[in-house]
Image (cartoon, rainbow, N blue to C red; front, side, top):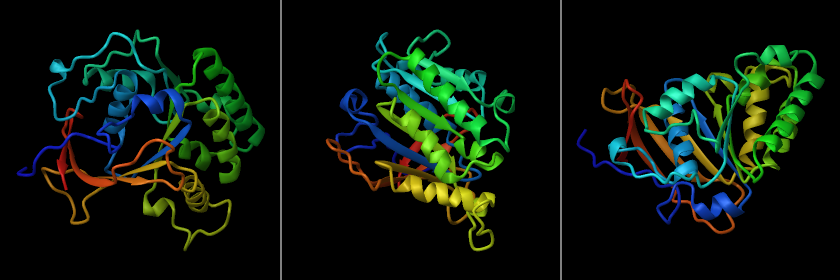
Length: 270
């Protein structure tokens, strides 16, 4: 790769998640991805930056200097992975979350359908009521809440996109910031063929459109348009959402990125 390596910057002050955002603003951010562009590496970096203000990309993790004190509380809700998966992948970045009291993981992957009946919308509502109470019990301040794979719940139950957004709002009100990671493959949002409100493609398309009208920040992971390459995994695009930040300016840009077999990532100028 002949391109120059580049640090990840989301805002014009060269920050990723600025400290003033963590403490004072109430925000909604969306990460979309497609098959072949798993966002795990990016979520790991955002968790690390939320907790410590550091970012283990294009650097030796052994040379990272982190405070022993977390600067914010982080709650990670996943419908796709368990705690062991993220504890292991974060450890590769030198981030230990097993004993970090500022990091809480809520596993909605392992036993989701013990708690939710797909045909019973009330059971989904109860799930979010339980989540709301659990978050209140876990964190005294307003945490940064990551949500991974909410589309799985949407597509596997009878809940509508509007009802799903309503439930999501319960969590948003408890947070300083929500970072939602969602799949957006073209085949999953094809409303030209599937245009009935109960079709999974229609539901996900409608959900994403409504979400995009509420976001402050959008990040998109996509494969190269020219096809696969050995030295590039895909592109990372950063753009403003429909709702502007009150005190921050987004640095709209596009990166090339490479994820290695060990899940370490490198960014390059586009």
